[in-house]
View (cartoon, rainbow, N blue to C red):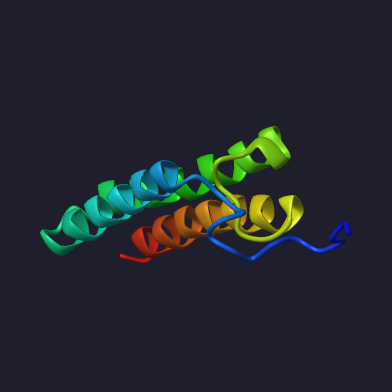
Length: 95
């Protein structure tokens, strides 16, 4: 029996080592933001989001980063990264 919907299961989606790497980058971003390096934190977080989105878009089903469908994952990752950068630099222009 074939499934026509994406799995939402740790056993069937993603690669744990890649996901742990993403977690490490998010933690680094949080620590940098906490000690006042908000530009570096934002850049790392945004780059991580954009890169995971691009990896999912390019590798499709072979991607180590899977959450839902290829289109959803790619859009959310890339849009989140770009959105974070736009908001960060918009706030900087206001100051």
